[in-house]
Amino acid sequence: MRNCISYGVFLLAFVLILGCQKDDRMNKMVDDTIYFKDFKENKITVFDWGKFDYRITVVKAGIGQKEAIVNLRIDEAYLADYNAQEGTNYKLLPADCYKIDQPTLAFKQKDYLQDIEIVFDSERIKLLQGKYKELYVLPCRVEAQGGVLYALKPEMATTLLIPNVKDPFLAFTSPGLQLEQIKLTPTGSEQVKGEAFVTTNYPNQWDLVYEIETDPLALDAYNGTVTDEKKLKLLPKAAYQLPEMPYKVDAKKNNGSFEFTILKKGLTNGTTNLFGEYALPFRIKSVSKNSINPEASTILIPVSFQPPDIPRTEWKVIQASSEWIGGGEKENILDGNPETFWHNIWVGGEPSLPHYLVIDLGKEYSVMMIELTRRLWNNDLKVVEFSTSIDNKTFTSVGKIDFGINNPKSTLTTTIQTTKARYLKCTVTDSNRPPSSAIAEVYVKGL
Image (cartoon, rainbow, N blue to C red):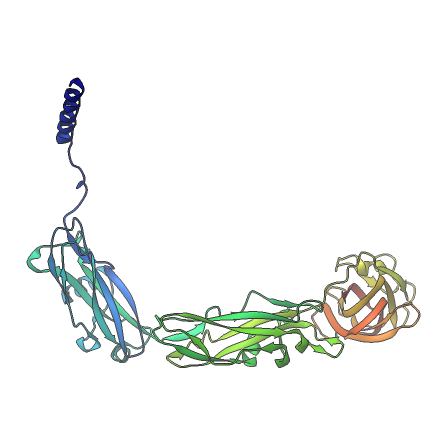
């Protein structure tokens, strides 16, 4: 009995406490308001395909206790005030450039967002102000019938719709030269797959069928903007493969892609590898609907096919026809410093051409490419012929480098037929200031 009395007292106290507490759940809540989601200024891209649908969102926010009939109206006085305050000179968009079928919204108590559809006529707007211009606008005001709702701030009840007619484009997502390079080596994979991406600049509603073609002119245009060292060669047709066209961007999607395959066999000629820095230039040839962005219609896929460097740790220059002791020693061509060099002897009588050096690679390699750097800021060296040997007795000519008369380059390479060799002989046969010649560095690539 005592326990029951105690329990009853506890319940009575709890009820009294609750009754004394203040209900603050509605604190900081405001009465219902009405306003544009994007108020004041609203720039709109109207894509040039005739009738363009645009939805402007009206918000009813607050406690959510009121119903309201809300009207959208065109407010020329607001446009005049806006021009005066902002220093602009916008003009009222004529009524034949747009259509609003349902300018009235019915908000229930718990409704939050509703849209009003405005259909812009891109052809009429384009005739009026042209493309990519902002001259004519639609000043809008939202009001609740009977004054039952107001905007939290006056400016939130107005918006200036600024249409700008643009072409609907298909384009490469990342046009121009791509940063990611496809690399091939003599011992690497026979083929490498890649993927290129296209995109629309508009909310796509259709199945877009498009075609791709190779465009050497796009590569020519790129090469015309870079130095000789950065120029790329056109990838041969035998060195790539495309899947059967056409390709497609699915409806309701803005992005698509197509695959391509780089084939190493297309960069060989018998036993000779066609080493170099290449590019595969693609152009969007056609699209089934709308247009192609002329400024983003091409892409360059860089492809590098190079043999690895043969390490020079075991190399030695074992012979030289002559050398200038005092700054032009033969060992300088292997020190990794292009500012040092070998020079034929010139003090006390300079020997006539040809001059030569013999390098021992330390062991036998499959030689595929030879790279030579001449003395920097010096144009003396013109032609160097290369020959290789396994025993340092019998040498076979494999190629040459010719700097010509006024070539600004300091480094040239020559690709040779793959040759087994341990010894490399570099013979200077021609000079632009005979008989003087100098070589800064020699590199060999292969396996």
